[in-house]
Image 1 (tube, rainbow, N blue to C red):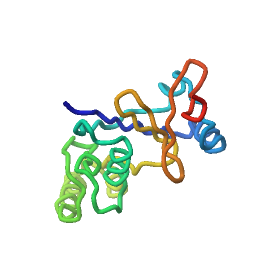
Image 2: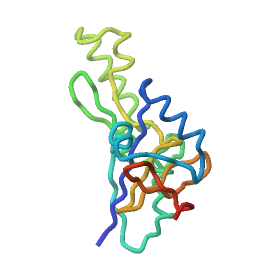
Image 3: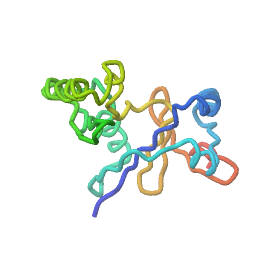
Image 4: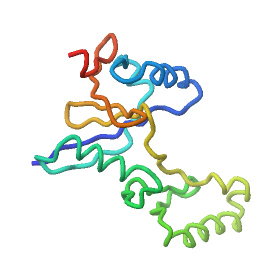
Length: 164
């Protein structure tokens, strides 16, 4: 048996700024996220399997390290980038940078994109940030400036562990 942990990124779109700011202002133990807001402002980006018996605390720590650039322990899934021009995928590790640059240059040389357009032709994952949510089986945790807070969604908003 195994446990599934799903990473949900909070939207970074300009129209979601007020929502993110409200969450940051509310802070620990005070989050209110309705199911409708969750559906509107969050996107599930990846799921990882963990062995039964691994604590939620360990899973949260592992995912934090694997989904943050600069940890030097990033997962391949986190580092996967896609060429928006042709759909080719790469693992964005230092040893692959020459190959990725050659791929970008090929599209420029063929006239598929301009030099300027080629600067944004790869799409990948961002590092986790405050207000992202990790769902482990049926338990949800929101990323705080330091640590996590367990939350649960309800029709009227989120309840934190402190409310229970």
